[in-house]
Image 1 (cartoon, one colour):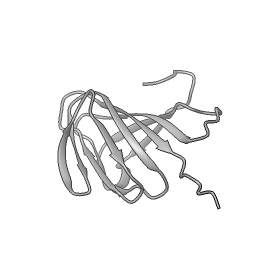
Image 2 (image 1 turned 90 degrees about the vertical axis):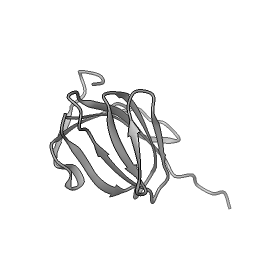
Image 3 (image 1 turned 30 degrees about the vertical axis):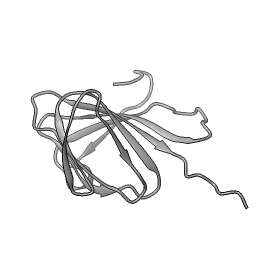
Image 4 (image 1 turned 180 degrees about the vertical axis):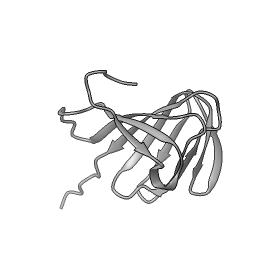
Length: 117
């Protein structure tokens, strides 16, 4: 995953999915004006992340290892190294890892833009 000195959070059956997802916050105490969070994630073989809505932030998901599938707003697509998904606030996402290896990806959450008066 990311930096071995930062804690890893383990979630079971995330959003009604199945299996284990390991998540590590990479920004930790650092401040970034337009980035709320950067997460390194690993979905175990045979696991899934259930369908969920991006409720607070626009997100970019960047896949770096493993082969799987995603559903974005009900549209299926294959994911693997080099694939990037852009998820505006309100979009839905589901992930599935049918492969023999972990599906590894990063999630970058953007801070909502503040409109000037």
